Length: 360
Ligand SMILES: Cc1cc2nc3c(=O)[nH]c(=O)nc-3n(C[C@H](O)[C@H](O)[C@H](O)COP(=O)(O)OP(=O)(O)OC[C@H]3O[C@@H](n4cnc5c(N)ncnc54)[C@H](O)[C@@H]3O)c2cc1C
Image (tube, rainbow, N blue to C red; front, side):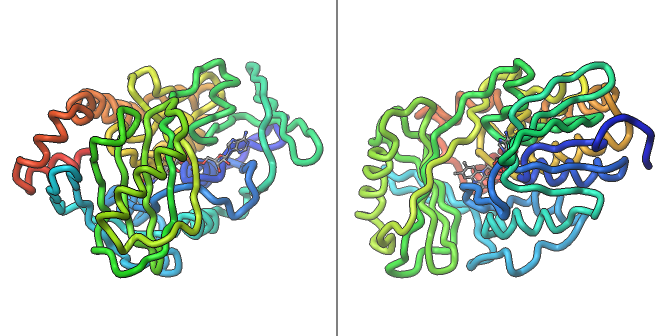
Protein backbone atom coordinates (compact mmCIF):
# COMPACT_ATOMS: atom_id res chain seq x y z
CA UNK A 1 0.00 0.00 0.00
CA UNK A 2 1.42 3.42 -0.87
CA UNK A 3 0.26 6.87 0.18
CA UNK A 4 1.09 10.44 -0.69
CA UNK A 5 3.51 12.38 1.52
CA UNK A 6 6.48 14.73 1.33
CA UNK A 7 8.79 12.09 2.80
CA UNK A 8 11.73 10.67 0.83
CA UNK A 9 11.03 7.21 2.28
CA UNK A 10 8.05 5.90 4.13
CA UNK A 11 10.36 4.38 6.78
CA UNK A 12 14.02 4.69 7.70
CA UNK A 13 15.50 1.85 9.74
CA UNK A 14 18.83 2.34 11.51
CA UNK A 15 20.93 -0.81 12.02
CA UNK A 16 21.13 -3.94 9.87
CA UNK A 17 20.99 -6.47 12.71
CA UNK A 18 18.13 -8.94 13.18
CA UNK A 19 15.83 -6.22 14.61
CA UNK A 20 16.47 -3.81 11.73
CA UNK A 21 16.07 -6.43 9.02
CA UNK A 22 12.77 -7.69 10.41
CA UNK A 23 11.46 -4.14 10.84
CA UNK A 24 12.41 -3.31 7.24
CA UNK A 25 10.88 -6.52 5.93
CA UNK A 26 7.45 -5.74 7.39
CA UNK A 27 7.48 -1.94 7.00
CA UNK A 28 8.09 -2.51 3.27
CA UNK A 29 4.48 -3.75 3.05
CA UNK A 30 3.43 -0.11 3.46
CA UNK A 31 5.97 1.71 1.31
CA UNK A 32 9.62 2.39 0.55
CA UNK A 33 12.23 1.69 3.24
CA UNK A 34 15.81 2.90 3.66
CA UNK A 35 17.92 0.65 5.89
CA UNK A 36 21.17 2.32 6.97
CA UNK A 37 24.06 0.56 8.68
CA UNK A 38 27.14 2.35 9.98
CA UNK A 39 29.43 -0.70 9.52
CA UNK A 40 30.52 -2.03 6.14
CA UNK A 41 28.26 -4.85 4.90
CA UNK A 42 28.30 -7.75 5.51
CA UNK A 43 28.73 -6.61 9.07
CA UNK A 44 30.60 -8.40 11.83
CA UNK A 45 28.69 -8.67 15.12
CA UNK A 46 30.46 -10.19 18.11
CA UNK A 47 28.20 -13.09 19.09
CA UNK A 48 28.13 -16.73 20.21
CA UNK A 49 25.96 -17.51 17.18
CA UNK A 50 23.56 -19.68 19.19
CA UNK A 51 20.00 -19.66 17.83
CA UNK A 52 17.59 -20.87 20.48
CA UNK A 53 14.37 -22.70 19.74
CA UNK A 54 12.31 -19.49 19.70
CA UNK A 55 14.63 -17.94 17.12
CA UNK A 56 14.50 -21.09 14.99
CA UNK A 57 10.69 -21.26 15.19
CA UNK A 58 10.42 -17.54 14.36
CA UNK A 59 12.57 -17.93 11.24
CA UNK A 60 10.46 -20.91 10.18
CA UNK A 61 7.72 -18.41 9.15
CA UNK A 62 10.00 -17.01 6.46
CA UNK A 63 12.52 -19.54 5.24
CA UNK A 64 14.64 -22.45 6.38
CA UNK A 65 18.03 -21.38 7.76
CA UNK A 66 20.38 -22.42 4.93
CA UNK A 67 23.15 -24.95 5.46
CA UNK A 68 25.92 -22.54 4.45
CA UNK A 69 25.42 -20.41 7.60
CA UNK A 70 25.66 -23.40 9.97
CA UNK A 71 28.83 -24.62 11.63
CA UNK A 72 29.73 -28.03 13.05
CA UNK A 73 28.30 -29.39 15.25
CA UNK A 74 25.09 -27.99 13.76
CA UNK A 75 23.14 -28.53 16.97
CA UNK A 76 24.42 -28.19 20.51
CA UNK A 77 22.61 -28.61 23.80
CA UNK A 78 23.00 -26.11 26.61
CA UNK A 79 25.02 -27.47 29.53
CA UNK A 80 25.21 -25.77 32.90
CA UNK A 81 28.68 -26.17 34.45
CA UNK A 82 29.46 -25.29 38.07
CA UNK A 83 33.20 -25.09 37.58
CA UNK A 84 34.42 -25.08 41.18
CA UNK A 85 32.38 -28.10 42.19
CA UNK A 86 32.85 -29.90 38.87
CA UNK A 87 29.09 -30.33 38.38
CA UNK A 88 27.86 -30.44 34.77
CA UNK A 89 24.16 -30.58 33.88
CA UNK A 90 23.27 -31.11 30.25
CA UNK A 91 19.82 -29.71 29.49
CA UNK A 92 17.31 -30.45 26.75
CA UNK A 93 17.74 -26.93 25.31
CA UNK A 94 18.92 -27.29 21.74
CA UNK A 95 20.62 -24.48 19.80
CA UNK A 96 21.43 -24.09 16.14
CA UNK A 97 25.12 -23.26 15.74
CA UNK A 98 25.62 -20.52 13.14
CA UNK A 99 28.32 -18.26 11.77
CA UNK A 100 26.88 -14.93 12.85
CA UNK A 101 28.25 -12.92 9.92
CA UNK A 102 26.85 -15.35 7.34
CA UNK A 103 23.58 -15.55 9.26
CA UNK A 104 23.13 -11.75 9.30
CA UNK A 105 23.99 -11.56 5.62
CA UNK A 106 21.40 -14.25 4.84
CA UNK A 107 18.77 -12.30 6.81
CA UNK A 108 19.46 -9.26 4.60
CA UNK A 109 18.86 -11.41 1.52
CA UNK A 110 15.23 -11.88 2.66
CA UNK A 111 14.43 -8.19 2.08
CA UNK A 112 12.14 -7.21 -0.79
CA UNK A 113 13.24 -4.86 -3.60
CA UNK A 114 11.57 -1.72 -2.15
CA UNK A 115 14.08 -1.77 0.73
CA UNK A 116 17.26 0.17 -0.10
CA UNK A 117 20.17 -1.06 2.02
CA UNK A 118 23.24 1.13 2.51
CA UNK A 119 26.30 0.16 4.51
CA UNK A 120 28.94 2.56 5.88
CA UNK A 121 26.16 5.09 6.54
CA UNK A 122 25.52 6.37 10.05
CA UNK A 123 22.56 8.24 11.44
CA UNK A 124 24.01 11.13 13.44
CA UNK A 125 20.75 12.75 14.62
CA UNK A 126 17.14 13.50 13.76
CA UNK A 127 14.22 15.76 14.57
CA UNK A 128 10.54 14.89 14.51
CA UNK A 129 7.48 17.10 14.10
CA UNK A 130 3.80 16.37 13.58
CA UNK A 131 4.30 15.46 9.90
CA UNK A 132 7.64 13.71 9.56
CA UNK A 133 11.03 12.70 10.93
CA UNK A 134 14.09 14.38 9.40
CA UNK A 135 17.23 12.28 9.73
CA UNK A 136 20.83 13.36 9.33
CA UNK A 137 22.89 10.65 7.67
CA UNK A 138 26.64 10.58 7.23
CA UNK A 139 28.31 8.64 4.45
CA UNK A 140 31.35 10.70 3.51
CA UNK A 141 28.93 13.58 3.04
CA UNK A 142 26.11 14.74 5.30
CA UNK A 143 22.59 14.33 3.98
CA UNK A 144 19.11 15.09 5.30
CA UNK A 145 16.45 12.49 4.55
CA UNK A 146 12.78 12.59 5.58
CA UNK A 147 10.47 9.75 6.52
CA UNK A 148 7.10 9.11 8.16
CA UNK A 149 8.56 6.69 10.71
CA UNK A 150 12.04 6.02 12.02
CA UNK A 151 13.02 2.68 13.55
CA UNK A 152 16.05 2.71 15.84
CA UNK A 153 17.44 -0.83 15.65
CA UNK A 154 20.94 0.37 16.33
CA UNK A 155 21.88 -1.90 19.19
CA UNK A 156 23.00 -1.56 22.78
CA UNK A 157 24.50 1.91 22.38
CA UNK A 158 21.65 3.28 20.34
CA UNK A 159 22.12 6.75 18.93
CA UNK A 160 18.39 6.92 18.14
CA UNK A 161 17.46 6.18 21.76
CA UNK A 162 19.93 8.79 23.04
CA UNK A 163 18.63 11.39 20.59
CA UNK A 164 15.13 10.81 21.98
CA UNK A 165 16.50 11.83 25.36
CA UNK A 166 16.10 8.30 26.70
CA UNK A 167 19.07 7.06 28.68
CA UNK A 168 20.84 4.01 27.27
CA UNK A 169 20.75 0.80 29.30
CA UNK A 170 23.98 -0.11 31.13
CA UNK A 171 26.04 -2.76 29.36
CA UNK A 172 27.99 -5.88 30.25
CA UNK A 173 31.52 -6.07 28.89
CA UNK A 174 31.94 -9.16 26.72
CA UNK A 175 35.12 -10.77 25.44
CA UNK A 176 35.25 -13.63 22.97
CA UNK A 177 38.44 -15.60 22.23
CA UNK A 178 38.40 -17.66 19.05
CA UNK A 179 40.74 -20.54 19.86
CA UNK A 180 42.37 -23.31 17.85
CA UNK A 181 41.37 -26.76 18.96
CA UNK A 182 44.08 -29.16 20.11
CA UNK A 183 41.57 -32.01 20.33
CA UNK A 184 37.80 -32.28 20.11
CA UNK A 185 35.52 -30.56 22.62
CA UNK A 186 32.32 -32.24 23.73
CA UNK A 187 29.48 -31.03 21.47
CA UNK A 188 27.80 -28.70 23.99
CA UNK A 189 27.09 -25.04 24.48
CA UNK A 190 28.75 -24.93 27.90
CA UNK A 191 27.87 -22.16 30.27
CA UNK A 192 30.43 -21.97 33.06
CA UNK A 193 30.09 -20.37 36.48
CA UNK A 194 33.30 -20.01 38.50
CA UNK A 195 33.90 -18.06 41.65
CA UNK A 196 37.55 -17.08 41.78
CA UNK A 197 37.74 -14.43 39.04
CA UNK A 198 36.09 -11.85 41.28
CA UNK A 199 32.87 -9.90 41.61
CA UNK A 200 33.18 -8.42 38.14
CA UNK A 201 32.76 -11.84 36.53
CA UNK A 202 29.32 -13.12 35.45
CA UNK A 203 29.98 -16.30 33.44
CA UNK A 204 31.86 -17.87 30.53
CA UNK A 205 30.70 -20.01 27.65
CA UNK A 206 32.41 -22.39 25.27
CA UNK A 207 31.04 -23.54 21.94
CA UNK A 208 32.81 -25.45 19.17
CA UNK A 209 32.63 -23.81 15.73
CA UNK A 210 34.01 -26.08 12.98
CA UNK A 211 37.77 -26.29 13.62
CA UNK A 212 37.85 -23.45 16.19
CA UNK A 213 35.84 -22.71 19.32
CA UNK A 214 34.53 -19.55 20.92
CA UNK A 215 35.46 -19.07 24.55
CA UNK A 216 33.46 -16.06 25.68
CA UNK A 217 33.15 -14.33 29.04
CA UNK A 218 30.69 -11.81 30.35
CA UNK A 219 31.80 -9.21 32.90
CA UNK A 220 29.59 -6.82 34.82
CA UNK A 221 29.36 -3.15 33.73
CA UNK A 222 32.37 -0.93 34.43
CA UNK A 223 34.76 -3.88 34.86
CA UNK A 224 38.30 -2.50 35.00
CA UNK A 225 40.97 -4.10 32.76
CA UNK A 226 38.61 -6.70 31.21
CA UNK A 227 41.36 -8.07 28.95
CA UNK A 228 43.43 -9.00 32.01
CA UNK A 229 40.36 -10.67 33.53
CA UNK A 230 39.82 -12.60 30.32
CA UNK A 231 43.50 -13.70 30.30
CA UNK A 232 43.00 -14.97 33.84
CA UNK A 233 39.76 -16.78 32.91
CA UNK A 234 41.40 -18.33 29.82
CA UNK A 235 44.35 -19.59 31.89
CA UNK A 236 41.99 -21.36 34.33
CA UNK A 237 39.97 -22.90 31.50
CA UNK A 238 43.07 -23.99 29.56
CA UNK A 239 44.56 -25.73 32.56
CA UNK A 240 41.53 -28.01 32.84
CA UNK A 241 40.69 -28.24 29.14
CA UNK A 242 43.89 -28.88 27.15
CA UNK A 243 41.81 -28.93 23.93
CA UNK A 244 41.65 -25.12 24.14
CA UNK A 245 44.58 -24.09 21.96
CA UNK A 246 46.01 -20.67 21.17
CA UNK A 247 43.78 -17.66 20.68
CA UNK A 248 43.59 -16.65 17.02
CA UNK A 249 41.29 -13.67 17.51
CA UNK A 250 39.81 -11.78 20.45
CA UNK A 251 36.72 -9.55 20.22
CA UNK A 252 35.50 -7.07 22.81
CA UNK A 253 31.90 -5.92 22.75
CA UNK A 254 28.93 -5.02 24.95
CA UNK A 255 25.52 -6.51 25.70
CA UNK A 256 22.56 -5.01 27.52
CA UNK A 257 22.48 -5.23 31.29
CA UNK A 258 18.69 -4.96 31.68
CA UNK A 259 17.83 -4.56 35.36
CA UNK A 260 14.79 -2.32 35.41
CA UNK A 261 11.38 -2.44 33.76
CA UNK A 262 11.96 1.15 32.65
CA UNK A 263 14.88 -0.04 30.51
CA UNK A 264 12.31 -1.20 27.94
CA UNK A 265 11.19 1.75 25.81
CA UNK A 266 9.29 0.82 22.63
CA UNK A 267 8.38 4.19 21.08
CA UNK A 268 8.27 7.98 21.27
CA UNK A 269 6.05 9.70 18.72
CA UNK A 270 7.02 8.57 15.20
CA UNK A 271 10.17 6.84 16.40
CA UNK A 272 10.12 3.13 17.28
CA UNK A 273 12.95 1.33 19.07
CA UNK A 274 13.51 -2.36 18.28
CA UNK A 275 15.94 -5.02 19.51
CA UNK A 276 18.58 -3.97 22.03
CA UNK A 277 17.93 -0.30 21.27
CA UNK A 278 14.49 -0.70 22.83
CA UNK A 279 15.79 -2.80 25.75
CA UNK A 280 14.50 -6.05 24.21
CA UNK A 281 16.82 -8.83 25.32
CA UNK A 282 16.66 -11.62 27.88
CA UNK A 283 18.03 -10.20 31.15
CA UNK A 284 18.68 -13.70 32.44
CA UNK A 285 20.31 -15.61 29.57
CA UNK A 286 21.73 -12.78 27.42
CA UNK A 287 19.86 -14.26 24.46
CA UNK A 288 19.04 -11.44 22.10
CA UNK A 289 18.47 -12.68 18.56
CA UNK A 290 14.88 -13.90 19.08
CA UNK A 291 14.00 -10.71 21.01
CA UNK A 292 15.51 -8.56 18.26
CA UNK A 293 13.70 -10.37 15.43
CA UNK A 294 10.43 -10.44 17.31
CA UNK A 295 10.39 -6.78 18.32
CA UNK A 296 11.71 -5.73 14.88
CA UNK A 297 8.90 -7.57 13.14
CA UNK A 298 6.31 -5.97 15.43
CA UNK A 299 7.78 -2.52 14.75
CA UNK A 300 7.49 -3.13 11.00
CA UNK A 301 3.98 -4.51 11.40
CA UNK A 302 2.88 -1.46 13.41
CA UNK A 303 4.17 0.79 10.61
CA UNK A 304 2.46 -1.34 7.96
CA UNK A 305 -0.82 -1.00 9.86
CA UNK A 306 -0.71 2.64 10.91
CA UNK A 307 1.76 5.27 9.79
CA UNK A 308 3.10 8.18 11.85
CA UNK A 309 2.35 8.46 15.56
CA UNK A 310 -0.32 5.75 15.43
CA UNK A 311 2.44 3.24 14.55
CA UNK A 312 4.18 4.09 17.83
CA UNK A 313 0.97 3.51 19.80
CA UNK A 314 0.29 0.21 18.00
CA UNK A 315 3.84 -0.92 18.68
CA UNK A 316 3.60 -0.07 22.41
CA UNK A 317 0.58 -2.37 22.56
CA UNK A 318 1.91 -5.22 20.43
CA UNK A 319 5.18 -5.42 22.37
CA UNK A 320 3.48 -5.61 25.76
CA UNK A 321 3.80 -9.47 25.91
CA UNK A 322 7.58 -9.13 25.33
CA UNK A 323 7.79 -6.41 27.97
CA UNK A 324 5.90 -8.63 30.43
CA UNK A 325 8.20 -11.54 29.61
CA UNK A 326 11.25 -9.37 30.41
CA UNK A 327 9.64 -8.17 33.65
CA UNK A 328 8.99 -11.77 34.73
CA UNK A 329 12.62 -12.61 34.12
CA UNK A 330 13.70 -9.61 36.17
CA UNK A 331 11.95 -11.19 39.17
CA UNK A 332 14.11 -14.31 38.82
CA UNK A 333 17.33 -12.46 38.29
CA UNK A 334 18.50 -11.68 41.86
CA UNK A 335 18.15 -15.36 42.79
CA UNK A 336 19.96 -16.58 39.67
CA UNK A 337 22.85 -14.19 40.20
CA UNK A 338 23.25 -15.05 43.86
CA UNK A 339 25.76 -17.65 45.00
CA UNK A 340 22.79 -19.51 46.45
CA UNK A 341 21.10 -19.79 43.09
CA UNK A 342 24.26 -21.08 41.42
CA UNK A 343 24.90 -23.48 44.27
CA UNK A 344 21.38 -24.88 44.15
CA UNK A 345 21.51 -25.41 40.39
CA UNK A 346 24.27 -27.95 41.06
CA UNK A 347 21.99 -30.01 43.29
CA UNK A 348 18.52 -29.95 41.78
CA UNK A 349 17.70 -32.68 39.26
CA UNK A 350 18.78 -32.06 35.66
CA UNK A 351 15.16 -32.13 34.45
CA UNK A 352 14.38 -29.13 36.67
CA UNK A 353 17.51 -27.22 35.57
CA UNK A 354 16.36 -27.95 32.02
CA UNK A 355 12.85 -26.66 32.63
CA UNK A 356 14.01 -23.54 34.45
CA UNK A 357 16.61 -22.61 31.82
CA UNK A 358 14.02 -23.11 29.09
CA UNK A 359 12.11 -20.13 30.46
CA UNK A 360 15.24 -17.97 30.52
C1 LIG B 1 29.54 -11.44 22.88
C2 LIG B 1 28.07 -11.61 22.61
C3 LIG B 1 27.56 -12.88 22.40
C4 LIG B 1 26.19 -13.04 22.11
N1 LIG B 1 25.73 -14.30 21.85
C5 LIG B 1 24.42 -14.48 21.54
C6 LIG B 1 23.94 -15.76 21.14
O1 LIG B 1 24.70 -16.74 21.06
N2 LIG B 1 22.62 -15.89 20.86
C7 LIG B 1 21.75 -14.82 20.94
O2 LIG B 1 20.55 -15.01 20.69
N3 LIG B 1 22.20 -13.59 21.28
C8 LIG B 1 23.51 -13.39 21.55
N4 LIG B 1 23.97 -12.13 21.84
C9 LIG B 1 23.03 -11.01 21.77
C10 LIG B 1 22.71 -10.65 20.30
O3 LIG B 1 23.88 -10.65 19.53
C11 LIG B 1 22.05 -9.28 20.24
O4 LIG B 1 21.06 -9.18 21.23
C12 LIG B 1 21.41 -9.02 18.87
O5 LIG B 1 22.37 -8.99 17.85
C13 LIG B 1 20.68 -7.68 18.93
O6 LIG B 1 20.21 -7.39 17.66
P1 LIG B 1 19.86 -5.90 17.25
O7 LIG B 1 19.37 -5.99 15.83
O8 LIG B 1 19.01 -5.28 18.29
O9 LIG B 1 21.23 -5.10 17.31
P2 LIG B 1 22.66 -5.39 16.69
O10 LIG B 1 22.76 -6.79 16.18
O11 LIG B 1 23.65 -4.93 17.69
O12 LIG B 1 22.70 -4.42 15.42
C14 LIG B 1 22.73 -3.04 15.55
C15 LIG B 1 23.39 -2.45 14.32
O13 LIG B 1 23.23 -1.04 14.32
C16 LIG B 1 24.38 -0.45 13.77
N5 LIG B 1 24.45 0.95 14.23
C17 LIG B 1 24.72 1.40 15.48
N6 LIG B 1 24.66 2.73 15.52
C18 LIG B 1 24.34 3.14 14.26
C19 LIG B 1 24.12 4.43 13.67
N7 LIG B 1 24.20 5.57 14.39
N8 LIG B 1 23.82 4.49 12.35
C20 LIG B 1 23.71 3.34 11.60
N9 LIG B 1 23.90 2.11 12.12
C21 LIG B 1 24.20 2.01 13.43
C22 LIG B 1 25.51 -1.30 14.32
O14 LIG B 1 26.68 -1.20 13.53
C23 LIG B 1 24.90 -2.71 14.27
O15 LIG B 1 25.22 -3.39 13.06
C24 LIG B 1 25.32 -11.92 22.11
C25 LIG B 1 25.85 -10.64 22.34
C26 LIG B 1 27.21 -10.48 22.57
C27 LIG B 1 27.77 -9.10 22.75
